[in-house]
Length: 302
Image (cartoon, rainbow, N blue to C red; front, side, top):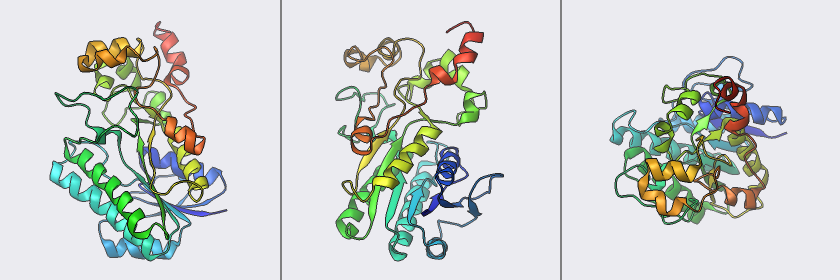
């Protein structure tokens, strides 16, 4: 049994990560601004923007690894300078705390938005999108995630002999209760997202079941010592969150992608997780087609 700390453990992905770690037999600590009833972890309220508080908390826990998810998670939910300041400060403070406490492993959440989709004039180099695609953030949230990936790379250069570290880019996280009809972080439901594909087109139909995200975290923690330090991984479902063939949907709703979209299979993901599969043996197991099957049949669209 190992001891793990999850920052942002009360969040949409964090709850599944905490649960998966606990179910795997590990001792889990969660740091978040508010506790969650029933979370299988010792829950702590710590201001991670205070470097001293962060350092004291990590030093007291002495975890075998940290999964850093705490962040302002939604672009434009606050002014860009504030999002950038908060997200980068959180990551910096947790890295410093990990180094000071000799924590051996640190996994940090980035975002697919670092590559720059969603703004006029952006065009992909190739499809599906993978980790080799150039970065081109155009808002404060994405820029904060690019900076965090830079922090990961810098840490390997400075302290790679002391700390195993990586970044991962989880796609649009869907929790188990959201498959059942609870609102997503945008306020609409998954059924509405499927009925109105424009809602998902802005994210190029990417998504990730939170339980699959948790399985990725477990896979990285299990293999961190054996793989290249400083890795970066797209982590997404094995299909696209859209009813019609994804190439057709992209050509209609994101015309700039039409020439490359022709090469995608009808249900292929636009974001490739092949690197995570090759390095960690991880592959998403949940699909909206199974999770929404009954609702789709009731709606007469399956």
